[in-house]
Structure formats: C-alpha cells, structure tokens
Image 1 (cartoon, rainbow, N blue to C red):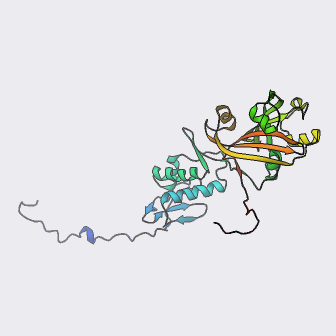
Image 2: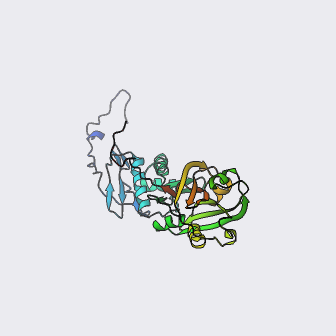
Image 3: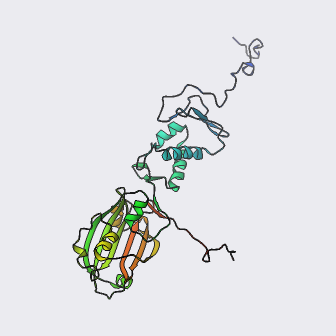
Length: 311
C-alpha cells in the first residue's frame, strides 16, 4: 500500500508509449466484409473516411475505391449515377432510402442528401415527399426537325406513339384561333384534345383546331390513336408545306398536371404551331409537353452558310 509522501517505483513496468503497436494497415487491405447488400459491401475494418476520400468495396467488381481525391458526396453521386445508367435501377424504380444508402456507403445522411441533390439537379432522379427518391424516365429528344407529325417523330426515334382522345367537339372560332387559321370569328372549328404518349408514358397534351368547312365530317371520325396528318392526307388530300412554331415555358394547369402526372403549376413546354398546305393554314395546335420527357434539339448555322467573325 502506498504511503503518503512516497512515490511508488514503477521502473520495472513498461510505459504505454513503449508498448508494441500493430503495424498500420494499408488502405487497400481487404478485410472480412459484412453480408452483401446489393452490389455493395463495406469492409467492417476498412477506414470509411480519410484525408483523401472514402474507402468502399464493390463485391462484384472486386475493387477497392480507396484514396479517392474527391468529396465524399461526389463519390457517392458518381456511383449512384453509374448504377442508374447500367439499369440496376430502371426508370420509375425507387432508390434505397437514406438509412440504407448511409449503411452501404459508410457515410453520413448529409453526404447522401448532397449526393442525391446532385442527381436531382441533373434530372436523373426526382424526390417525392413521403414516398422516396425515384429514377426518372429518360427524355425523348427530337433531333433536327422537319415538317412531320408527332407519330412520325416518335417512330423515327423508335418509340411507339399514342394519341388518346380526351375531348372532340365543334366550337365557334374565337379571336386567337380564327386569326391563326385566317378565318372569321364564329367559323365552325373542330377542337380535338388528345393525350400524347410515347411507349405508353404521358408526354404531352395537344389541342388542335381545324376548320370544318375544309374538313367536313372530320368531327364524326374515330381519331383514337390515329395520325391526324396521315388521315388528312388520305381523306382530304392535304400535303404539308410549312409550319411555324413558338416554344415557351408555362405552368401546368390543374387538369393537365393530373393527366401528365406532374404537380400543379409545374414548368412545362407550351408549343404553338400553325401548319399550312398549298391552300393556306389548316391547323392551329397548342401542345403542353413535359420537359423531363420531351426535348428539342436545334441545329444553328450562319445565315450565309459561311464562317463569319462575331462582332
């Protein structure tokens, strides 16, 4: 028993600092892993974080992602993006929840949320409050455009088009559509409103106006899943000459949003088109298109077809 005022002699004991320490482990050393969780397993003794990044083990690729010189959320976002592109999560499937992703990658919730935000901004996924994060369906991109119908455009992209008739009625021409069709106000018009789909997925809503004095009996025809331009050519001898389009950004109305499967007031493309044949304008159509499922690619060239110096 130690006596007060007396300092015990520990000279025979080894100090903590003198005790042998285990050799440092290489960051690429593969240690026993946890049970496989999909494609990922996180080594239980693998350092999750380091000054340079994260250490992850992919049991299918058999690779260690160690000493990655990138922020953790970029590493996670890159891996999620790769798996989405590979089809591991197909369109409209739900990603694992935050807790599961944290466990798979060995990172914090803040890191996972930041990674998901990157994918949301890229348009790869969408967050639905209370439901989770879902993979978005890839947008259909129309290439260099000629004068063609929606059906022809989709067919050229290898997509099966659809046109479900929502309403079909005869109306009196109002000022705007009368002006577009070069007819007097009050002229009988067919108003045809259709839900346009690609591979049975809603893409847009088209409302077409056509003068019935040019197309008698058109209002009595079955227009379900029919190419309107093909019908007009076959039955009325219409040959397309040109069209003028105006594309702007608008907000989805309540009814349109339900049909398109988007939130009310979501941004949409609003496309106004005036189509002419040799006799003049014969169709005026207003289309409301989902911007995440339909895109337009334009090719711009110099007006004189030669390289020119920008002033």
